[in-house]
Length: 323
Image 1: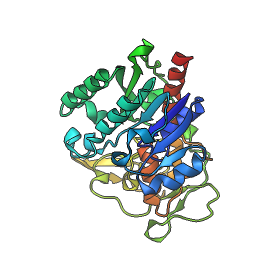
Image 2 (image 1 turned 60 degrees about the vertical axis):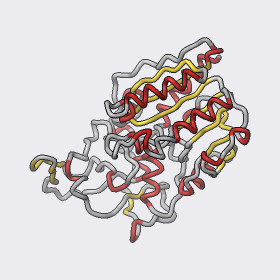
Image 3 (image 1 turned 45 degrees about the vertical axis):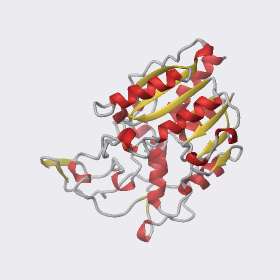
Image 4 (image 1 turned 180 degrees about the vertical axis):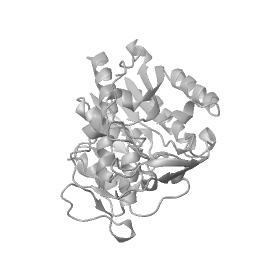
């Protein structure tokens, strides 16, 4: 089945669907920081680099499905929560426009859990109503990626819709109670390298992207625990390197006061997870290479992606329905 990808980023959702046997024929993202990474990892897919606002639906090929996560910052509980009133929040309407014009058999949209918060629930219900009005039976559900084989706590909202002519509704796979600990995904990696001066990327690393951001820890970073042990899943991998979780070998953090933590005295080095460690936690294989000049761009690409394992499990269920 042929799929087109919107707001593709570096391609986490795309890779999961590809692994499940879908063909990604066309993709779109206007962020120049992701272009090289996407094109080198998906050489068979045409990447349209224009803003989605400038792409008429006739320029997009026919497809069986549309996948993508419209930018989520405006819905984030950690942000200003402007939602549909923010220009990025309005990009959901572009997703709807293309869906209405192309009329694929199915779609999958991903967003942050803040989209169903009390501040945004009315807008979210309106979006679901619009999906139904253009001909789709929709099933939205909050999920935690840690229950689907991803070694991190990552709460998101997934909306899957089947065209009403299909006369089916998507059923989410049963979550798994077993959580995968960090030791199973990153413990075999050798010691990571620090970024170069001004956090520029290293060249010729033995393991691609196995480098971490230098620099101190802000008061915001130190406002809560950032370290998980080897026997736990990771905290959420965020899009900013400054807020990357600590490596399990870092000293433990302890609470000093309200919204204030410190590091225990230790001979161990305090460091953030490397870009590659974050990528593994996001279920990217090591052969998936991220291309960037500044290490912060690597963290951003990885953190913005849909975990590949979660994408694969959802894609596999969709494929079963259409088989």
